[in-house]
Image (cartoon, rainbow, N blue to C red; front, side, top):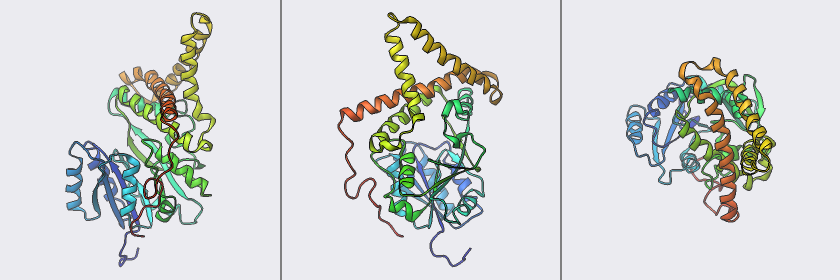
Length: 345
């Protein structure tokens, strides 16, 4: 490493809002990286807890940390604000309820050395603390729970259509205009779609492990996956080509269950068959995941699987209805979302 380097090699952006429980652990894991040539930009989305104070305390101890405030609060806006201030060659996103091993950034940057990949990402290993949280973490590690989202469970390196907490060249992110601020969720998948649309490839490497605190209650999980479904609907309307057949599974499940319920008087057998088939699938998936949890957590497994699917499917239809009734999604105006952010190069 060049000791006289005037600008950092890597910019780490940490979007955060109300993360006082985890933000210190996150910052410690970033500051402990064996690649020291970093700048760490924490963008606080108008937290109502002690998050900004805790970040500021860490910044006083480590000059690489900088705190930026995002009054709008949304994640895409936070990411773009971090990008505006970025001076590194590479950009790494780390969410504020996650931790990374001390060789994570160095190894991720090394994967970019041959110029093959536009973005690189690792595996998100969910962490549960409560009984419900442990069941949710197990459901997230199941193909039945998350489908082809390989970054939740796969052990094989692969080219993929989306990576979590991606590592990208800063110039590429700026060329693409950053993240779409019209989105409240699914902004990372939408960004990766544009990366691939521009002709770049994405690498998933499961040896890059991210410890990620999942939701710890079924209620929180429902809200999260409902928001994910909303976001997927918005992205599907912006980029119809981004929609894959697997994305339609939960919305179709919700539609079939709803129609079966409405038609149960005329066709009770269809309603029973539909509901019982899904319950059987949930039961089998729960049994296959029993070894991942113990005690009371096992009781939450069926509920975790069903909540993920039904909340996502409901959220998709809700988001689609909202977008269609509010009119077409407007293209970004000059200087706003998906325009090239400013900032030093």
